[in-house]
Length: 310
Image (cartoon, rainbow, N blue to C red; front, top):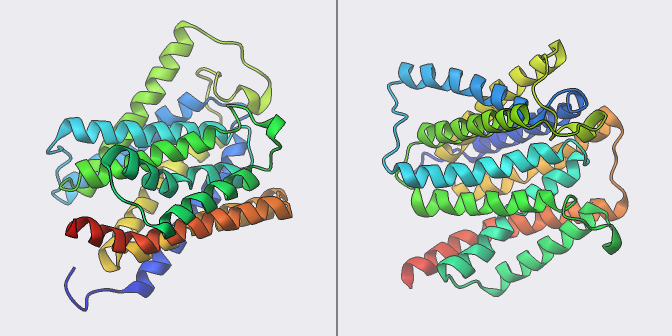
């Protein structure tokens, strides 16, 4: 970025607008989880996104061919796996709790940086990890006896997403934005197609309502389902475009801090639309997770400088 070219106010507006958009459209997922299927949703949503992305890349003369296909594939597997779990959990958990689980990603970035890449972590980032995990336990609002593998799924999504972010930094630094975006949506399309095929060949028992979201096969898409697909497909692409622009006009650390607004907006929209207000303990957990993510983002430039000097 050229000196004097930074526009932090514009970046803040773009990121906050994107998080408000994501918080809104993800809240509407509950309208279709009772009658549609998770895998059909991914198949149709990703198919629409790819159908928009390909002519867009052609119009702007951009390539969708990766320089290192194996690395882009690995990154796409991690990030798409996180989103499969994220949208699956939306079928049976409050959105604030699901988003809180996904936003453990910065915490896992720190943990994986140490365990997989041997990086050193200072006391502030260590404190942020501890703070964040304490926040997750509070945000989930569960007693120890209520903890199951299912209720911790959003945290697994955060781990995969964090590892995917590391893969973006470590393996895909030279790849174009549209390449990474295309790889992600193609992999989401593949997940959806595979899930639909498996359930067609081997149908599973389907519970009533939203409980059958993950095991429900292909259904005749109703009008509301199609509307949600279009909103998700177009909204996802628009949001990514706004984020890319934000990273182009401001420091990456600033943008990462403002991305934490998704937790706030997901909670606000859930309260407005569904009357789903977190209790004081859960609200404290959301605040701690947000604070931990902001602290890690603010300390990252110093950590990166130390890595360069090492």
